[in-house]
Length: 286
Ligand SMILES: Nc1nc(=O)c2c([nH]1)NC[C@@H]1CN(c3ccc(C(=O)N[C@@H](CCC(=O)O)C(=O)O)cc3)C=[N+]21
Image 1 (tube, rainbow, N blue to C red):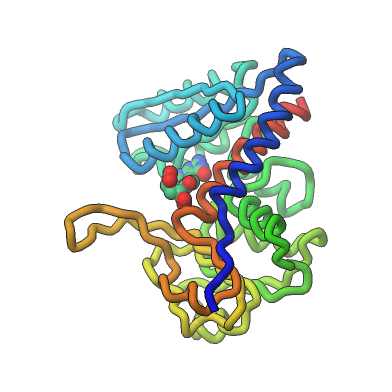
Image 2 (cartoon, helix red, strand yellow):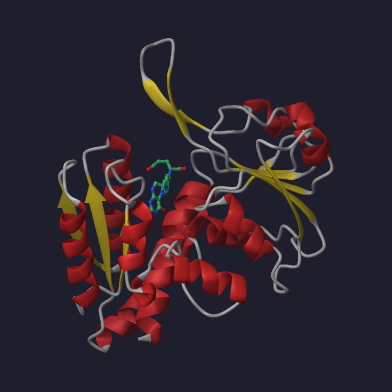
């Protein structure tokens, strides 16, 4: 058996098509949504991601507001950019690209953002709203995972989902999303303190791996027919000396799983599509 690929790239393209129509309605009323990005330093991966987000914006008609600061920017420099975006009526929502350079206090920066301008769903108030089940921006990666499963009719309600990884951008909020009444999954959170990871993943209908350890999930750890979603991406340098990004799921899992969201081409493009969705929804609420 070979897994049905959960094609995040194609699904994100379809979502962007839908968003383009909604953006047009907003624009016709003189309310073009604007997405801001704050990028500090010159990490090449972060620059690539942010460039991708602005390309996405251009495709659906969202205005881009790009703010870049040098790697030695002070906390006050970053605060000033955050304050300006908070006050800018053209900016519907924005993100501060993470991670920030180590000398900056990431949490302090996030807390300075206006919660209603949080496009990422990573502001503490947004995360609190998620726990409380109040309307607000949802974290993009978890939302993208749920949306990808939905669009492929992979049943979530009543299923056993194992989430490997408890990070703030993916693993931890994914558990919160999947245990809402509207999703109704049974979720197990696995992490470095888990004694027998394989015992958990083998029992799962759906396995999401968001750890950042290449090939952590091997074929023997997957129940035949299960849905597997690869969220990890780690930069590795191959024997040819070339760098590439690899996921947390071993390539041979494809022969065991029923569904596979690969890396690249799975959850990553969905994360970006959900960022755009959060901005369009914020503009529609405004
Ligand atoms: N405030 C903040 N919000 C984020 O959402 C955020 C962040 N900081 N910091 C870094 C991580 C990483 N991240 C990715 C999103 C999409 C792909 C993606 O689309 N990847 C492609 C491959 C790369 C490509 O083709 O561009 C794929 O999986 O197919 C990757 C990584 C968002 N992040």
